[in-house]
Picture 1 (cartoon, rainbow, N blue to C red):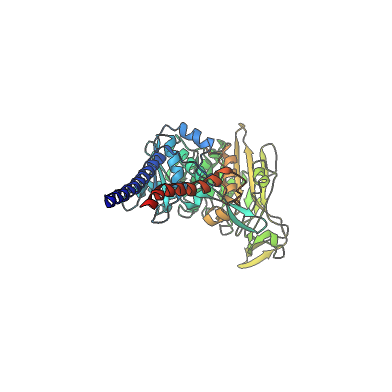
Picture 2 (tube, one colour):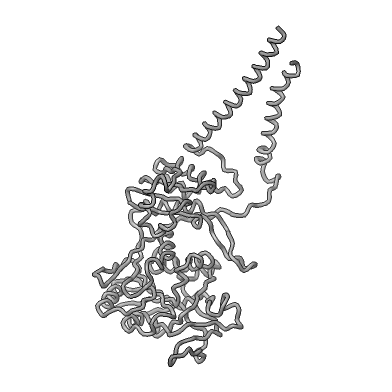
Length: 477
C-alpha cells in the first residue's frame, strides 16, 4: 500500500507538471491570437516605437478603403518592431490587414510593384502596401524607416530616429488618396532618363507626389496646375515647344530647371525661355578656393554652397539647420533680368567669395579669374504677366544632388527639393506630422519607473513560489 501511495503521489506530481505546461502553452497561443487581433500588449520599449500617435489613429479611424500590407522577409531578417506596429494598425481598423509573404510563393507582388518608381526595392526584405480601389502600390524598405542627421561635432551623419510609423502611415495615405499632387518631367531633349532620375522620383513619391513624363514632340500637353521639371537638356527645343512652354508659364505654370556644366553652352530657344525669368546659365564649372576648406567637400569641385535666407520659401531650412549641401560640380547662373514688380529674383545658393570658374576657351581649359566669386548657384524667380497671372521658377546649377540616394542620405538635398516644390505649387503635399522615435537607448535608471523593477523581480518570485508548492510535498516521499 505504501508503494502504491508513493506511486500515486509521483503520478500526481507528473500530472501537475504536464498540466502547468499545457496551461502555459495554451496561454501563450491565446495571448498571441489576441495580440494579433486586438494589440493589447503594452509597449514598454525605451522609445515607444510601436505606440501610435494621435495623427495615425485619426488616419486609421477615417480610413474607408481597404489596404493590404505584405511583409516580405528573408530568413532571420524579420523586423520585430515593424511586425508589432503592423499588428496595432490591423487592430485599429478593419480596413487594414497584413501578412508575411514570400516572393517565391506570391510572384504577383512583383507585378503589382512594376508601376511603382521604387520597384527595384522589391526584394526579399521589404513591405508592400496595396489598395485595390485606387490601384496604387507603395514599397517600403529599411531606408524608409530611419532618419539621418548631420552631427556638427563629429562632422558626419548618423541615425537620429526610427520612422516606422511615419513611413507606414504616409504610405497608407499615398495608396488611398483620391488624387495626388503631380509633378511633370519634360523629356525629348536628351534630359535625364527615367533610370537616371529613379532616386529623384522615388523621393517625390515618398512625399506623396505623382510623377508623369511629358514629351511635347509627341503631342503631350502641359498642365499648369503641376510643376514642370526640366532636367539638364542636351538639345534645344523647337519654336513650337517654346510656344507651349511660354503658354504654360503665362497660365501660371511653375518650372524647376537644372543645368550642369556638361550641358551645351548654347541652347538658344531654351535659354530665351529661361531669360523670361531673368536667368541664364554661365559656361563652365565653378571650383572652390583650395585654401577655403569650408567651401568644399573632399575636392574643390565638390562645392558646399551657402544657403541664403533672402527668400521666405527657403528660410525654414536655414532656421532648422538643414543647409548642408554638396554640388559636384556646380554651374553658375547669371541674373540678366532687372527686379521689378513684374519680376522678382531671390538667390538661394551661393559659392564662397574665393571660387573661380573653369570653362573651355579656344580648345583649352582656362581658369577664369576675372569674375571671381561669389557665384550664384540657385535662384527662385516670380514672373508676372499683363493679365496678373504669376509664374514661379527655380533654377539650380547641378542635377546630381537630386539623382543620388547617398546624397539624399548625407545632405539636405531632399529637404531642399521638397521645400522648393512646395513653394512652386503654392501648397504642401499631403503629409503627416509624425516625429521619429529615438534611435539611442537612454541609460537604465531603476529609480525612473517602478514598472521595470516589478517586471524584473516578480517572475523569479512566482517561479520560487511554484517550486515550493510542487517540491514541498515531495520531502515526505
